[in-house]
Image 1 (cartoon, rainbow, N blue to C red):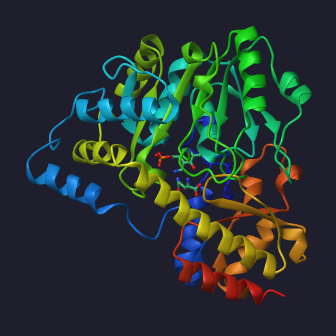
Image 2: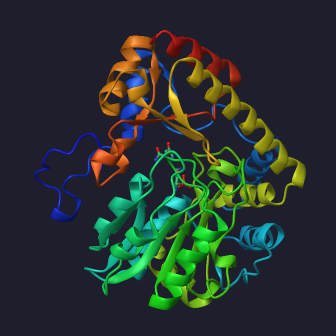
Image 3: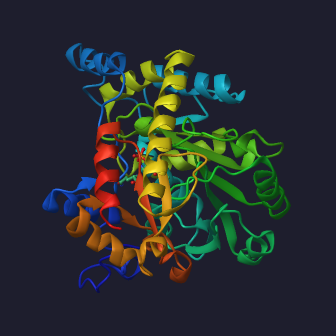
Length: 391
Ligand code: PMP
Ligand code: GLN
């Protein structure tokens, strides 16, 4: 779903209704209006210098400048496997159970394309990250949603069960969750796991914000009993190392699931990002200090923006993770979040994202807007000062 959804004469039926992503649209609007861009989630400061140095050294010394192996370079697969063990006690064989992809985006597309038959149903939560809808459509599968509602963004178990049918093939989970900032609790994950096991469903889980959790813990659903064998875990280096343009992602799953995803991946990009694979391997191996500083820095930015939004009159829903916060447009006098997002740049010079584009049931999200706080404090300060002008 996106803002532009008019009929496209050459586009196949599966993709009708999809237009430019909201992130590109809002960043273009920010550039055009010279607004502070708190829309698209990308940091305004690059990641650790060791990682940059590793990338340039790899390029200079010819590491990865030609096609790397289809499953990814061994250094990175070993580092991904070690990361899953170090943070979650999960053991994945780097040769059979790890696959490197072009960002989490390609991993998600390849997983859905590999695992779904035409007509299969995929259960996911709304609001959903925009590419899920397109991935499911490209696979000829059907999206079924369960709504997460503010303030806590919990879900009704009865609604979850009602979304299932004999055609359900997989559950597509995202925790920490974009755009809500929700971190699924152990109880919620246990419920989802129980259903997946009882109904023999697969789970594809998008964990790209795994190291940005402010409250509670990130629990990979693959770590729950009986889940490792039915779960495809996806993450990437984009958020954790602040290199969203490098697009180094990965999959961890059983050999059979990895092999299925690999076949689809192979015919999408085959391989990508050779030298950057070596660099992200260095990033994953950084000490605990790196991960603690990343979180502490993001927590400061979160606290700053949340307080600033409240001072500007917004009702906000406190995120437990990610680098996003959702606010209620009605608290500043707008029923419609999309309208507020179109007006904000001109009125006060700030860009946000309208959450309605992440909903099937638009009424659930039409008054919600999302701000990112992965920006320097002075940028956030400027945005807050401008937003205070709304009152
Ligand atoms: N999943 C979620 C929830 C995201 O927010 C993003 C945004 N970057 C992605 C996947 C895509 O990750 P990547 O940039 O590694 O493809
Ligand atoms: N994940 C980022 C966000 O939610 C955007 C990524 C993109 O532009 N595709 O803002």
